[in-house]
Length: 307
Image (tube, rainbow, N blue to C red; front, side, top):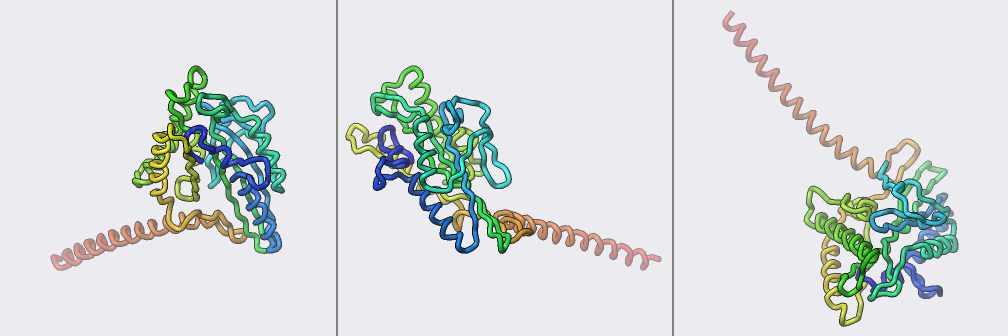
């Protein structure tokens, strides 16, 4: 969820305390758990693990860790088609109720401060990460994937929020990372050769979601307040820019291994394109070799005539 401070992003993602006002995170987790139960009758067994982090002043903080202190030790690792964050706690999720407990625990640890625009202003971006892995025992097939549910800190104009001291430092970090997110979408929209994922921790963590192998849905929240019309206009322009971005054709790629010896479908596509290049290179070399043989043969014929 994206938007100015105080526009309802956290409520969109977390919702209220009663069942009818639940937000995106509890509803999404419920759908994943329900789908896993349905597929169990088809022979699939699933494991789900969740982590919950925030990015505060460009530092990753584990919201499920006791004390949840800042730590530079948490590193983002993109490896073997998956993304992990070193040193963060992960919790097994087997039911919606367990996910609710984790969300409440993380919400209590999140960095929140008061500004002139919002009495409970989120001063960090939070990411709820649900890793899902499945095994079909009869066929030996496996699958894996991750769902990232992101509550972005609100963009804010310092003149209106009255931020100073630590609040000003937080506002600058928030606006810088949101600007980096905009730069990534601009690069993707223009199909630039270089996409600046590494310009912020937020964009680097979400790179697999934004880079074409994943699928991304963004909610843009706006405020109905007349005084926020300028911020609303900026948010809607950003929404139009994001909406024009095409993240790869055919939707998200499924990381599925069919049988024990098969490669993941994602890797198969890569292997296929590589083998096509190899074939072209081999054909080129063969043509070059044939040309050389023809030249050599012509030389021998000329020599025999002279003799």
